[in-house]
Structure formats: structure tokens, C-alpha cells
Length: 116
Length: 114
Image (cartoon, rainbow over all chains, first blue to last red; front, side, top):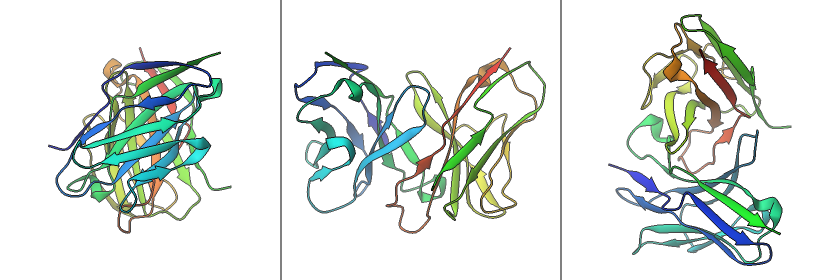
């Protein structure tokens, strides 16, 4: 079965420090991977995606993610965290076999708290 | 502005009282989908639609209905809501081709069933 795991419920980081939010996946075939962010009382906003090509993907708000096929990981990173980055982050993988082929399988989410 | 809208944003209701949550998108997307978000579970797909008059069950369809009479609208219907349907609901849309397109999400509807 296809799945996504976000092993950390919460990540705490000081403003200005680098941040990493972890994600591992299990899929058959080549994965289509996504990161979304949810700010309080807002919908999910797309951050970035990996489809093919360079393993380092750059996205919105200075975020990037590194695709590692051998470790089946897609960690979200940012070189210097801002307090405004505090939010709930979801990793997702496209389901290749159901849901109309566009269904996303989400991880449980990781709450990022950036402290001043 | 390209967007997915949902109404209402917040709803408190009682067990058994039929309700509809509306979803509309202005991006001419073929694919629309409903998810529910529960703590520790992420988002799970309820129903999806590949195009007008084409709908199918997702992973957690029990207790829900949908319809797709127009391309832009995809309402979620709870015929007889129960407390276990208390959740945060998101509508999403995207193009169908290749599946590499990101999905656009609405702002969410927080439903409480008493």
C-alpha cells in the first residue's frame, strides 16, 4: 500500500536557524511528491513538488526539498527560518492506482514552531 | 483570481439534520475532490470527480454524497450527519492530465455535529 510518513509531530527551531521537516514515502514506481502548508484558519497552500529531474526542488517562500530515492525521503528544508513560517506542513504523494489518479495521500502533518 | 471557494466556513449542526457544503472553482479544472482532515490522520479523500457527471468514492465515503452537475461546482452532502463526521473539510481541484499538477484547496469548512 502506498503511504507517507512524517515522523515528527512538531519541530521547534529558532528564528534564523535552518529547518528540516522530514517525510518518507512508500509507493510503487516513480513518485510524484508534494509539500503543502496550512496556516491557521486557512486552506492548504502548495509549496513545491517533485515530478522528475533535479533532486533538489525549490518552491515558494524560500523553501526547498530534497528527493532521495534510495532513502525514499523528501525532506523539506529552509536555510533560515522565520517566525512567520510557523504552520502545519503536509507531505503528500500522488496515488497512482486510485482516486482518479489525482488523489493525494497525505502524511499526518508536522507542526513547525519558529521561536524568536 | 484563481480560487476554490467553500461555504459555509463554519457550521454547527445536530445529528440527523441534512446539510450541504458547497464548493466552487473558477479554473476550469476537470478534477475535484473532497477531503476530511482529522488530527493525527492528515487528509483523507472522501469522494472525487473526474468531470461532469463522473464521481466515485474515495477512502472514507460512508455517510457522504456528492454531485457534479456543472464543471465548477462539487457539493458535499451529509444526508444524516453523525458526531463522527465532526471534522475539517477541504475541497480541492486540479487538471486531470498527467497528475503532475498541484491541487488547489479551498479554505476549509469546520463542521461540528452535536
